[in-house]
Amino acid sequence: MPDKPSRRDGRRRDQLRALRITPGWQPSAEGSALIEMGHTVVLCAASVEEQAPAWRRGRGAGWVTAEYDMLPRATASRRARDREAGRIASRSQEIQRLIGRSLRAATDLPALGERTVHLDCDVLQADGGTRTAAITGAYVALRQALAGLVNDGKIGRIPLRCAVAAVSVGLRDGSLLLDLDYAEDAAADADFNIVLTDAGDVVEIQATAEGAPFGRERVGEALALAARGMEPLFAAQRAARR
Image (cartoon, rainbow, N blue to C red; front, side):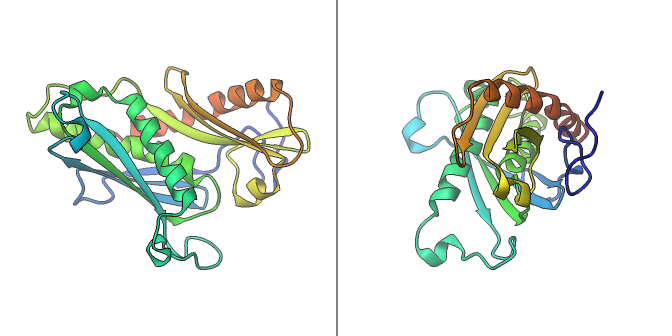
């Protein structure tokens, strides 16, 4: 039987927040998507550059890379822009590398040709799960940009091996919760960020104990819960295709 509502917003422990993906939100970009997960809102834009990075040129393959940032008032108090500190914050660096790795795992880089796709993920409103929302939305923006290359006759097919999406899972008082908001994330005993393909294969699992260590069996349980929660994400991605 499904779990009864047990969370402050009335969700079951295995239930995603309200989800909406709006494709083409930024029409000046080759691909874009606005993703809303509860009160978390992330704008993802894909830009195509007709050359590979200098260190990859001549290899016959392209590259997909990402940048991640958060607007100053995406959070309850103003967050200084990275440029004010004169460097990219370590958290932003870690998240944008995760986004890049996740989207490269889905992309057939040789079929892309010697091009670079830049994915810019900007958090407009943050209420937990910004990195997972960015990955899920960035896939839609990437696919839209690649479809544009096909329509323009620059490549023969969309060079994607699979779809990818991501979701968070938290451990709190012995129970696992899907898709944490900020308050749940802040109170979690452990948290997981899980990236999967639409075939169910693992791209990345980030798992952290916030206090006491947790048993290894919890990793498998968290993965199973995330896999169930991915289905609506992949359905929303498919519905957003243009």
